[in-house]
Length: 451
Image (cartoon, rainbow, N blue to C red; front, top):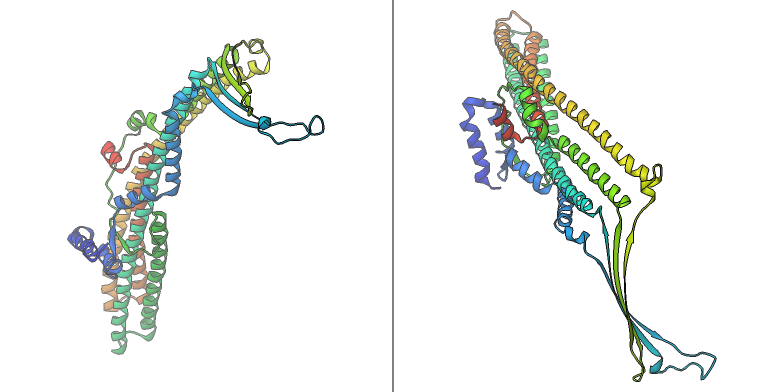
C-alpha cells in the first residue's frame, strides 16, 4: 500500500500496452495514478482476503472445529456418568423436649459418589454418526470455500469489464469533443450549418453524461466489493487484471466421468444415505438388542458430635433390559425401524435425481461455452466493421457528403459494438467459472483439466 506499488501497476499496464491497447492504461491512470496512496489488488489477493474475512465462512470454520473436536473424542460416548455430592444439615426440636437449641451436635453432613455406565448394541453406530457429521462439516466448509472463490472471481471480472467500459466511454467522449472542435471551426468558416455544430455539442455533453453515470456506478460497485472483502469501502485500490479468455473445447462426457463423483452435492447425498443406514442400524440395535446398565454408589453420613459415629453404605447394580415390543410387528418401535429403511430408499432416489441434474448442468455449460465463443467471434467481426464504418463515415462527413447525425450514429454503434464484445467476454468468463464450480474445481485446476 505505497506509492511505489501504485506506480508498478501503471508500469505493468504500460508494458502490456501493445497487447491490450491503450484502454486499460487510460483507466489505470484515471483510477490508480489519481491517488498517490492507491495500491494494486489482484484477483488472487481478493480471493485471499475473502477467505480470511468472510463472516459466513468463519462461522463454518467454527462449526467444523466443534464437529472435529467431538469426532476426535469419541471415547466420551463410552465414558461413564460420574457424580459426587456433599451436604450439610442441622436438626433440633422446636416445641418438644428442650425446644430449639443451636448447638454443634445438631449439625450433620453427608457424602456421596456414584458411577453409572449404560451399554447398548447401537453405540458403535452412534459413534460412526458423529464421525460422519464431522466429514459432512468438512465437505460443507470446503464447498463454501470454493463457492466463495467463484463468487469473488465473478464480481472481480465484472468490475474489470466495468473499468474497461469506462475507458471505452472515455475514448468516445474524446472523439465527441474532437468532433465538436472540428465542427466549431467548420461552422466559423461557414462550411457547416449551426444545427450540425449544436448537434456536436449535444453529442459531447451526452458522452460526458454517459461516462459520469458509468463512473458513479463503477465506484459504488467497487465500494460494495471492498466491503464484501472486509476492507474499508473507501480503500484506494486499483483492480489489477484483464478479462483474458481462450477457447475451451471440453468433452462433457469425459468431465462427467472424471468429476461427477467429486461434486459436493453428490458426495453429500451419499453421506446422507450413509447416515440413514447408520441410523437404521442404530435404531434397530438400540430398540431390539438387550441393553446393559452398570451402576455403583457410595454414601456416607455423620453429625457434628465428636462422640457420634460415621456411617456409610456402598451399593451397586447390574441391569439387563430385553425389549419385547420391537419384535412385535405393528408396534411403534417396529414401525420406526421399518420406516428408517424406507428413508434409505428415498435417499437413493434423490441421489439418482441429483446425478441426472448434475450431468445436465455440465452438458449445458459446456454447450453454452461453445455457443458463447461463436458469439464472441461474431462480436469481434462487428467491432471491426463498426470501426471501419466510422472511419469511412468520418471521411465522408469531412467531405460534406453525409450529415453529422449519420456520423454520430456510426460512433454510437462503434461504442455499442465494443461494449457488446466486453459483455460477451464477461459472460464467457463467468460461464467458465460456473463450469469450474460444477466440477468442484478452482480456476487453475479447471484450466489444467480442460486444455
